[in-house]
Amino acid sequence: MDNSWYILGAGALGSLYAAFLASAGADVTIVERSTNRQGKPNGGRLAPERKFSVASSVDAINRAFSINTSQADNHSEIKHLLVATKSYDAVAAVSSVRHRLTRTSDVVLMSNGSGYQHQIAKAVSEPRYFYCLSTEGANWRSANALIHAGSGKSRLGGVDHTHPAEWFPFWERAIPGASWEDDIESALWMKLVINAAINPISALGGVQNGELTSDPALSTKVANLCAELSALTGASAYPQLAGDLESEVRKVIAGTASNRSSMLQDIEAGRPTEIDFINGYVSAEARRLEIPTPLNDALVGAIVELESTTNGKREIEANPK
Figure 1 (cartoon, rainbow, N blue to C red):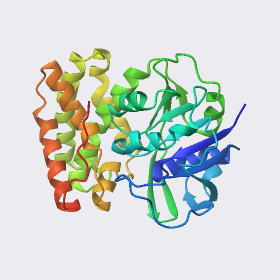
Figure 2: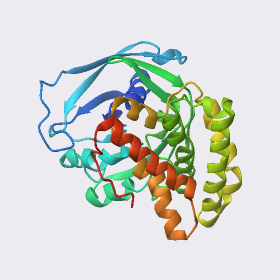
Figure 3: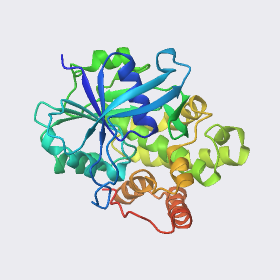
């Protein structure tokens, strides 16, 4: 079996998975984009390798890595692709390597939020698509030093693929906590509402995930938001998930207590957040189902306002549907 994996979006999480896969013996390549989000050429010369270290409690990846790189406009075929870009950038990222994907290519989407998956499948219809829902925690201590901040689970599946992909046994060995989900759509919804409950509150508070439980005021905000999200879930296509929602949120908070959420990291770095594809998508679904979500809607507005002060202006206007 072809054991090569290409990584689109080698941020903290993408680099962590590159380390997991490389440590297990995969031939891993990081895809460097030829242009930025505005379509302008990226300056500088492509380095043949991306070098970084990982500090982790997982022995296999607690070391230095040198991962090969490839320009997006290269013409070699990509058989296995992991997409770990921001959700608002995912369509452009996959489109940049469309010429390298075929009907036998497998693409694993790992970006946060919902809505972008259908946009990608419509824009680039050739490959087979799978999803990875990750609760791993990772952040950069410096430009080349990655911190594995919290061990989590990696739940994989495909809407049109109920049986595990042929490469999944390798992932099961390479990625701690990897499992195959027959009902990936329910898992996607649960991941969405978990992110909706954690990310904006942690970003607005400027706190690590663990403080969402240890701080009484923040814990109450999480509880109130979970009640709202549970009511929406009860009216959705996944009502069986409503009763366990807050419990699942609390479990993720406990498992990633020392991690800073991706939304908080984006705010601190002056980057656009994925609010449109997380809480923005929740708001759109709530309007469609005629379920009031005032707390969630207020968080969307607060994050948009915070972005405007940290970024100067919003760089994107993403449609969550």
